[in-house]
Image (tube, rainbow, N blue to C red; front, top):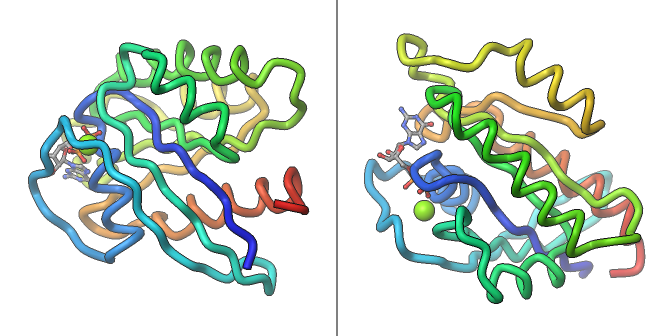
Length: 172
Ligand code: GDP
Ligand code: MG
């Protein structure tokens, strides 16, 4: 079975753990320890192919350490996660994306998906769909609006990233 490493990146508190645990265990917990960095595994079928994903739920991606560099260089695909309820977390993605492209210098078509979280919190929303669309278009990467709490678009995010990884790394 083909195996891909996925790295989940984004500011603290945006919902990286909630997203990951929703996908891996189909569970919703209100609170995760924000400092814990953990790797999960889940199999899925995409385009008729059985794929194993190793998913690294990172903590504290704001400070890029040596360790982050190791994850990024061994990662096949990246989820850039921000909260729809926190505009600054969208801007943080710029730096994270640049770090990835720097570490992957010279590699074409790095698989990335932008993920806006907490879509269920309508009244707290700060980021318009158009703002995300413009960013995603300029970076030429797909984006999804999701809710881990309501299980909206979670499966779709991982499938979209997996499709990119299948194309980019057919021999992994
Ligand atoms: P992380 O630091 O990026 O891993 O963020 P967490 O996954 O720990 O989530 C931070 C907070 O946001 C927690 O209180 C979660 O319950 C909350 N949260 C995460 N995802 C959602 C969501 O889809 N909807 C709502 N309403 N809250 C969420
Ligand atoms: Mg977390």
